[in-house]
Length: 346
Image (cartoon, rainbow, N blue to C red; front, side, top):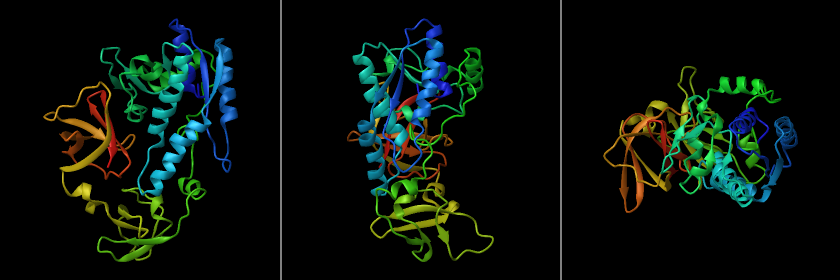
């Protein structure tokens, strides 16, 4: 129970269905140089637990979060890659440390407020949330058959508006609470400001595709492929179209930008994305002759693709236009409403 409306309603729905519910707040590492809202969030969660008359515990995973989420994020940015801390948080904390401790305490299931679903079949399948605007299956592609049959997503079958109505019906104090945004547990962060506390950075040059210096940036590690903000262009006319980052050189501390129409991903309707650390949730490999859909960012428009496996390494062949993908991002694969799994963009 995070203190938000989704996990609050999840607890209430499970209790109504006859489950013996215990609420758990997860305390994680927080930077000492930014606001720390966890105490208020914990109080909100405690109020809901008290209202529902269910036991309430706090699990301290500061060490695990710092190691598996924060240190990972810093290392990836330093290497010039684009991490996804929310994916890692789900893998290592919510369905890692929390799942394991809950199991040790005798829990049959763990439940969260994610907008996703499972189908109860064998093997268990991960399905998208009914509310397509809130669907969070993208962040859950690392789940496996070892854990998925023991995970419940009570609000995954509801629209967000319905969840708030249920919260009011249950008399929950979080009914009108705004949704949390930003990085898992830490909330909204200025990534550049955050990284400057851990990594030494310096200003560098912005290049065009011919290698000509046309501007300045604050440090190559701050930018993601496809990004269009945060750097300055000195040589730009009043009617020029926006430029997007298409390459980074960490050693030279330069970024190369281009008009969107000239980015590699837009030049052709068919291109290849190589993957590492792939995971197929149902334990079955996708079929090479079948067309699937995929995305490399949360809420990104899905693009069609086929898969190729060679020497146990997977590649995605995009067959419709897509946005540029950055190394380190999660590519998540779908077969209609089923989330099949995914991998890390190499």
